[in-house]
Length: 141
Image (cartoon, rainbow, N blue to C red):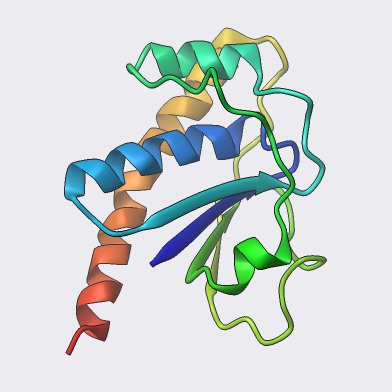
């Protein structure tokens, strides 16, 4: 199974979601590929995002925002968007599911705003993975 997390800059919300999704996948022992990208990638992951993830024991210091591509999406069962659209990159015959997480864009440099985003996303990821496990069980013979 493959899940893609997408936001505009791939420097904040999608990086938070990806870090928590990787942790969730590992804790549950699931075979889920997690990818992330942005529709207009930033130069680097925001400093406050790195800091609030470090507060949870997660290190994204080596990550660089990247563009999401149609190749990333074509074999993903789920694409989770955070304030952007994948219409320009979604393959015409793609049969996956789009989940739209309506999350406000955090204020640049605002640590408290980043913490609120982190906490919101940290709460959503386990719910998503519960849905993934349930969907996987219904597809299994």
